[in-house]
Structure formats: C-alpha cells, structure tokens
Length: 355
Image 1 (cartoon, rainbow, N blue to C red):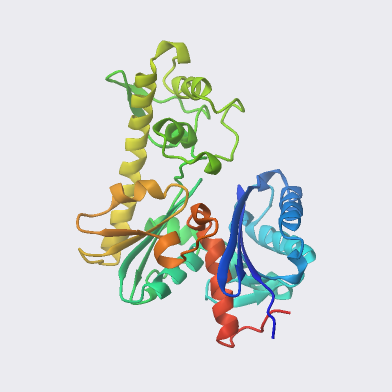
Image 2 (image 1 turned 30 degrees about the vertical axis):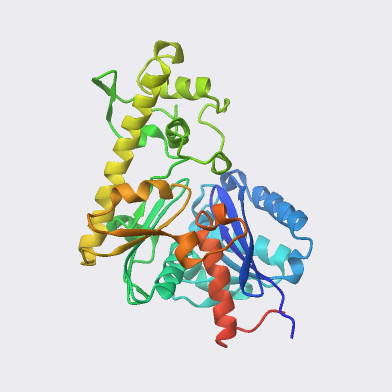
C-alpha cells in the first residue's frame, strides 16, 4: 500500500524548519524565517510558502514539535500551544504533536496535553540521536540561532529528567545563547578593544550574527534574521554595529581591529557555553571517552567546548545522513527527528498509519 510522505515541523519563535521523508529517506529540508512575535500571520505565510514548495502538502502526514509558544504575542504558553496547533490543524489536516513522554498527540487533544507539547523539540533530536547511537554515551549539543541545547544520553536513552524550560534552564541543559540573534551585551559585561577592557553598552546594538559573519563561520544562508539596526549585513555596517558596543564608529578601527573585537566576543560566548556543557557532563557522570553529536547553525563551535579526549560527530552525518539538503539536516535536527520518529511509530504500530 502506498504511504504518503511524512513532513516533520519544528515551529520556533524565529524560524520554522521542516523536513520531508519519502519512502523513509530524507528528501528535502528547509528553514523559513518566521518572527512569530509579530503574530500568527507569520506562520500562515510560512505555510503558504510550504504549499508552494510542496503542492501535495495536504496529502502528506505531519509530525510537529514547537517552541514558538514562548513568544510574547501569547498571553500564556498554553495559549501559544493551542493557537499554533489550531493553525497547523486547519492548514495541514491531522498533524500529530510530539510530547515530552515521547508519544503523539492529535490536534483535538492539544488543550489537555499542552504542557507535554510545549518546547519538546530538543527531546526529539536527542532521542533520535541516542537511538541511532545505542553503544555510545555523550551529549547532543545543538547551537542554534537563539539557544543552545545540551542533552546527555547513554545506551540509547536520554538521561535527563528535566522537561520544562524552567527545569532545563536550572540544570544548564538549556542556554539562551545562539549564533545569530543573541544580543552581544548578553555575552559579557566587559570586552577588550585595542588591548583595553571596556564596559559594554547594554543596548541592542549588535548580535552574534555580526561576530560570526566577520569570523566567516556563519553560513550566509543561515543568516536569515534582520540585523539589530535593520541595516545591511555588509562589512561596513557590521563594523558599525560592533563599534557601537564600545562607543566608537566604524571609521575608528581597521578591518583587523574589528576582527579582533569579534574574536573577543566569540571567546566570551565559547567560555559560557563550555561551562554549561561541563556542568551537564558532571551531572550525568559522562566518561572521558564520550561523544558529542553536533547540530544547529552554530555547530562549528562545539569542538572547542568539549572535554579532552571526546569525539565529535555531526547529526547530519552520524544520525540522519542525507544527500539532499545536507547543509540543513543538522540545522533542522528537531524537524528531521520528529519525521523519523513518526515513521518509526507507524512502523512499530504505536501510531496509526498515514491517511
């Protein structure tokens, strides 16, 4: 019997990511900007784009996870989960929502199970990683545009008992640091400019995208969000934004000096993320020869965070290899994961097959 394709969705506050499985294999992966804080119309626009990309969208089965319920256009997280789910159910038919107990929830059950659905995307990608690497112990480190997830696993199982954002912020498993949207003033109180430590201007003058654009590590296709001042992302405007952080103008520094300043900001972020990762490693008593699975558009930072002796593999190569759209597989790891996990649930008989 022919089975429709499965599309996995990760509906965040700033982006929507989607991954399409055809005959159990990744066929397409995409990320759309979606500033959800501007209203649910942004999600509607993304779904229009998805329909243009995949004309048979409504004939597919859909697996959904989300974090977008946190944005401030919703009065409460419950309201966010309900309203996001309602838009998706109206446009996609009968989506299934991934939950914190690793089961699935139909749209008509969202109201009573919203807490199980809210911010479960990290668990999907961590569970998928653990299942695909059953002999390993280690962590999934997903450094995205806005946040970093650090999730320990061992013998095919996710180790953490934390589920809510509040619990994960307390444990260090959720860190509000990313490589695109994080304001630079959140990284350090003082930063070195021309060999002198300066207080940082606590204003939304620049973001981490400015740093990694200058270092050449942020891929242009992952740099989808507007700059802090709404201006261009060329070198001159990037220098100007960095300069504002220490009270100078773009003309006051050379290209080498702006790169040095960017590297100082980078060092501050790496130090913070390294400390959070080591906290998780210690809490779960991971061994000296453990493994890090890297994901997210900031995966390039992960090797510098690891304890000595650790190995490092990419989600897009070790967990969910795919020839198609390979640059996006790790970036959209939760979307890929929920699609694969839904396919496994259908195959295992724990979820009804596609329509």
